[in-house]
Length: 292
Image 1: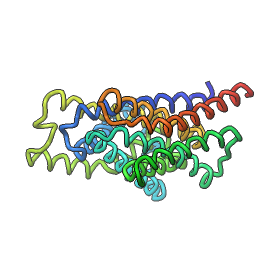
Image 2: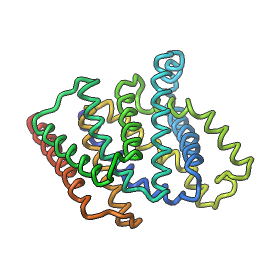
Image 3: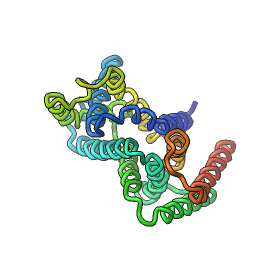
Image 4: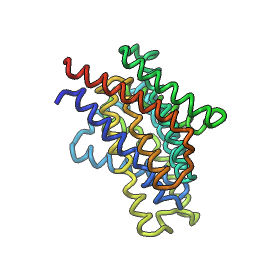
């Protein structure tokens, strides 16, 4: 299997896992979003550190610590990632899963734009048609909201810029994510200890089920991010962006059919245009693959 094919597979699995994450965070809706964010950081670091110890691969990480440019790049990536996590968790537990799905429908357009402007990537004719469908769909959905959907735009920009950082990052998927979580580990630990000492900590006062879910947040968080980080280095940012439509589609279906969130039939036009763009892009990928 070629690196590009592996990257495509990793992207598909990562986006599917992200698509069903609302179910996981809904199970933790009694826990404040800031505490969930802190636990994601801490237990992701523990999980990744265990993987690196097991594989005995500390050398790339030690070398990166002495490079100011690398630290600055991953600090920015860590800040973008933590902002995206917080906004998403808060929105899901506030009953706004459908609105988060709009954010991740907008994000691929931003990834494609960044790929074109920053990385000088090129799109084929059918790919431009797919982008046109997606732009029309997002514009239609924005009109339905009666103004700029700020929550959706915040999710789109934080994760789109994070994807760009990962595309230019020097470290591999495992070591890069370890460095990102490590940079914010100390603030996360300080905050969680403070909450526990104040009697507000979910780990000390929550149910056994809540504790298990918080402890497992590291694996749930790190695994799809590792897949995404590998995919970001193996396939184009434009392809990575268009494939991301799979994740918000899953989230939309979960929000509407599992948690009964409002979804007027008028919005089907916008989502239909986006799905048409995804289908066209997939057809283009299949034809290019067969030619090779």
